[in-house]
Length: 439
Image 1 (cartoon, rainbow, N blue to C red):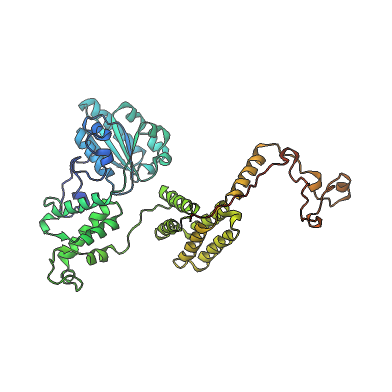
Image 2 (cartoon, one colour):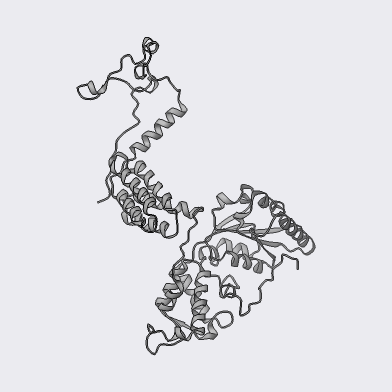
């Protein structure tokens, strides 16, 4: 065994975290990714028939990426090597590549190289895997919480199949928690614990699709029941209830604040602001305030949100409601002035106002078409009658000649005075269109 080899199934001890002890040992025990791993699915068949090539597992934390990599090595009887992008460099990569080549040459055994947080490797580090991937010496399994399209270089991505792991659903989470309470060998079955339905629901909601978070909270609850008699004698417990029962008040005490899945520099950041923008555009105030709250409560920069609201006011409301821009700017000023969390209602007021406002993207379209014309078509001189003439020479050259002062016109506009250059004459960039919210 080399420095980088990991045992196929590390021995569990009393100090091993519960989530580690409860890792599935077979594909049948693996819960929550049935779309990928149910019997007969292509990925499962490739694993069971040992036809798997390099893959990227993309999904949020706690969805089973590491576990699946271990299972692949176990099922295919491959050498398993785990790599952390945080701790490893080019030197370590080259050493592992050399060992993988030697292992396949001498023993005919491939190496499953699991690279956690592969998005943290730079291009040179990722490129170092390519020769052995192409030679078939290793099956590279990269795990990432970030969109591989942006974080994995094109050469490596083209040689890998991307599988998307979803956050675990409520039923899968309940199965994992109940299995842990019943498992006497690795779980909490020997402690004789039970759990109330509302406490189980609270754990599932708190975990937000992350099995590791759910099992950590369950472990804390079990520890609290076993170590603190005061917990068992709480006044808010049902008189005569089982002291080994995990109840909602205990879970609520341990959970405190629910951690929201959010990365202010990653894809979820853009997904949520997109959801907010599109909900306001669709005149849905309820969805708008919900997505806003998701961002605010997860710790997004409130001034970033305010800037997006200001942009929306011009892009999607525009002159259909000229007050919208003022409302958005006022929200930005309010957040800057009073800070957070008090500024959250100013943002909410602006988001709801913008959602309910009549919509027009005429300003946005007009500017886009004008910008395209300015960038791609001939830059004609400004017509003489629109030029200023502060000197005698300019006047002699007919600067300003023929200009008509709009305020002197009967209707306040010189309708027959062309203000566009000759090549753009008569062109319409601004075409007003106004739509109200849904009934």
